[in-house]
Amino acid sequence: MNPLVTLSIGSTYLLLLGFGIFMLLATYLFAWWQKSTSVENFLVAERRVNWFLGGSSIAASWIWAPAVFVSTLFAYQYGLAGLFWFTVPNMAALAIFALLAPRIRKKMPYGYTLPQWIRHKFHDESVHKLYLYPFFFYQLMSITVQLYAGGNLLALLLGIPVYQATAVVTIAMLAAIPLIYSLVSGLESSVITDFLQLAFIIIALIILIPWAVSIAGIDSIRAGLSGLSGSKNIFDPSIAFSLGIVTSIGLIAGSVSDQQYWQRAFAIKEGHLRKAFVFGALAFGLVPILLGFLGFIGADPSFAATVPSGVDTSLIGVVVVGRLLPLWTVFFFVLMLLCALSSTLDSGMNAAASLWTTDVMKYTKEERDLMLNYEKGQKLSDREKLQKHLLDMRRLSGARNTMVWLTITGFLVALAVIYIPGFELKQLWWVFNTVAACVMVPTILSLYWERLNPKGVFWGVLVAFFIGLPLFIYSNIIDKPVWIVSSALFVVLITLVFCLAWPEKRNVRT
Image (tube, rainbow, N blue to C red):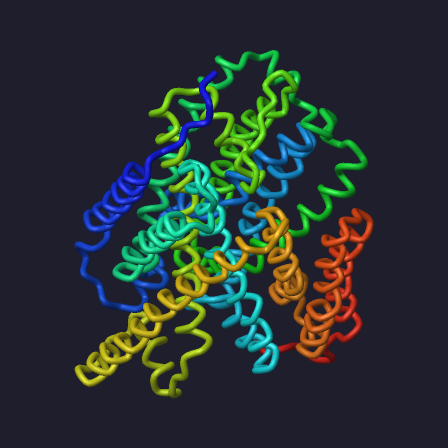
């Protein structure tokens, strides 16, 4: 077996530069040629994305740092049971949109964001503003997590601490690549690059994983099926309780509270929505299942894989590939991981842009009527066309500025997290998914229960955020499984209790 490969600084920069140029060329060939300046194209691709491209984009956006790193980590630490409780809830989190996406499109066919639906349903600015905090926070964390994970990956391959200047430069390059092409074409560029990135990820895994398994041997897989301290039994009670419940809540809440998937729910053709999300869930599921084999190999006592001191444990899969396969395959594997990270980075940027232009920027009633008339295909006068053009320029400027500031902030937060002792990707992932869980129940109820009261939503979310979230963070700090599970359940149940205990006496306007 080969030792873990260390890349040179020059080759790492060249790898990032080549990756960036390829994605920019792909965007130019497939999206920029239209030279569209409309906000409708920038934010929702004019609502004409088909199920195949849409499903590929859904899968690629969900294949982010937790999917490529935590999936291997769970297989490594908890064995087959850990991989099961990571993969199945992940797929369910996307599949649930096969129900939610058509529902919201029927209720608000010309919408852009989930908070916009909340304002439309309740006509309550306090609830609408409350919703914006977790939705913006989730996009900030989606940027932070990708840059944190990417920084650790590149630092590992460079053989240097992640906080050194060279590693920081690579993190900045990783952030700049999706930002550049997103600034030009918005969601359309994200959909195109997502398709290419998903194709590369699947091809890379189909080549590398069987190759690694053939070298390690099937006996190595068998020896690692229980992980370091897990179980071959996917329904092992202790793992199902401590890991399964928290992971399931976090993943389903994460998708429901993530504007990235609501944005695609408004961008994909209405008749293609169910097929797109089911296809996305199935395409996604292939990735953690294949990557789990690396975790099993790493957990084999005779293989004895460990990550270097000071490196996030979730990079165990990179260590296994580096020890088993030739140098060029490490480049191949790293490119696959860069595709996974980049697909979520650009999606987070586009989601934040849609939130800002739709829910934060102020418009007159005349401007709102003009935007709606354009969406409905009504003929505009020459004066209205000029007004629409000027309005688009203002909205596009706001969208692009949001992308830039979100990326800069996410970059700074990622650097800050690197310096927190003992804080790893798994903890970061759980914390921001718990923030998302604060609005999961009222979001689903808002689409199906006419008597949902905005006051119940407001106070339920507030209590969950200021009591449930600190309890969950503290439970993780003291590492008490019962406390962790109880606090996660509290967040979900308290919002449900407030919503059900405070029903609207009359039908809410929708």
